[in-house]
Amino acid sequence: MTDRILRISMSNAIEDELMSSSVVKNLNVLDFDYAPEELIHRDEQLRFLAQMFKPLLSRVSQNVIIKGPVGTGKTVIAKKFCSSLVSLARKQGKIIEYAHINCRKRSTDAMVLLGILNHFDSRFPDRGFSVPEMLQVLRKQLQKREAQLLVVLDEVDALLKKDSSNLIYDLTRFSDESLIEKIPVSLILISQKDIVPLIDPATLSTFKRSNILLLGKYTHDELYDIVRQRVDLAFHGDTINEDCIDLIADIASEWGDARFAIELLWKAGIAADHQHVEIVTPEHVRAAKAETYSIVTESKLKNLDRHQLFTLYAVAKRLKKDGTAYVNTGEAEKTYAITCEEFNERPRTHTMFWNYLKEIEGAGFINIKPSGKGHLGTTQLISLPDIPAEIVGNKVEELLK
Image (tube, rainbow, N blue to C red; front, side, top):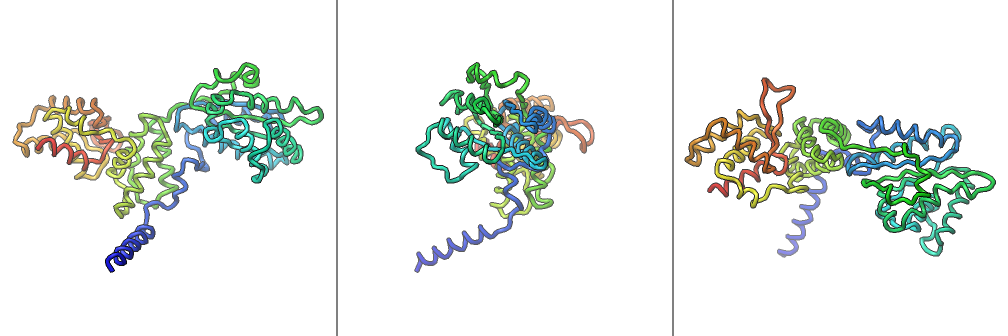
C-alpha cells in the first residue's frame, strides 16, 4: 500500500512539474543553433560575406575563412548569410545548394562527403563508396539540378588535423574536371584557430588573402543588446528586469562570449521555474553562473582575513535583502558597519573599507564598476558575478562563527 502511495505521489509530482507555468515562452530561441531574424552587431560582417560571395550569382566560386573565439557568432553568421544567399538566388532563377557540416562530428573526408550527399538524398548509404566515387555522385547530383554548391565546414580544424586538406582541395578544384559545364563549389571554413598552417600550399592558393573574416569578442554593450533581444523573443513580458540583463552582460563580457551569455539567461530562467516564481531575479543569474563556473570556493574564502570577510558578507547581505544586481559603495559600507557590530568588532575607516573591497575584487569574489545613467552622483556599483548572495552569505557566516 505504501509503495502504491509513493508511486502515485511521484507521478503527481512529475505531472505538476511538467504542467507548471514557465517564465519562458519560446525555449527554441535560447538554443545555440537558433538564428534570429536580426543578427545584432554583425551587420558589417554579413556585408563582408555578401561582397565576397557576390560572384556566386554569376556562377563563379569563392572561398572564405571565418575565424574567431568561441561565442563570437561564427556559425550563426554563416547560417544566416547562406540562407539569405540561397533565397535571393532562387528569386533570380538560380539554384545554390547549401550544406552545413560540423567537422567535429564528421572528422574524415568520407564522413564530410556523406553529410553533403545526405543533403541531396537522406537514404544515401553510409558504406560502400570511396571518396572519389562520392565526389562523382555529388557531381551528378549538381548536374541534374543545374545547381552550384556552397559548403560550410564548421570547426574545420578537426578535419584538417585528421585527414589533412585533401577534400578541401578536391572541392575547390571541382570545376576543373568538368570539360563541358562548370559546376562551381564554394567553401566557408570556420574555426576558432588559425588553420592556414594546416592547409597545404596548393589548396591555400584557392583562398585569397583578403577572404578571411576575423571576428572579435563581443563587448559588454553588445552582449547586453544580444541578451535583451533573446529576452524579448524567449520570455514572457515583465519576467526579467534590466538589472539581470546587465549582470549577465557583465559576467559574459570577461570572455566576450554570446553563447555563455545565452546559457546564463536560459539557466536563470530554469532557476526561476524551479522555484515556481514569476520573475527572474539577479539571484537566479548568480545561481546560473555558480552552476556553470563555480569560482567561489571555501578554500579561497579561508584566505580572506576577518574584515575582508565582513566586507564580503555585507555586500552579499545587502544584495540579497534588496534583490538587486548591484549595491553602491555607500550602502555596502553602512551594512559593513552593522555587520562589524553584530560580531563585536569595531568598523574600520572608509579608506580601509575601500581597500577591503579592492582586495576581495582582486581575489575574484566581486566586481566593481562606476555607476552610469540612472544613478545620482558618482559612485561605484558592486556585484557578485559568480555565486548567489545567499550562498556567499551563508559560507562567510560559517567561517566568521
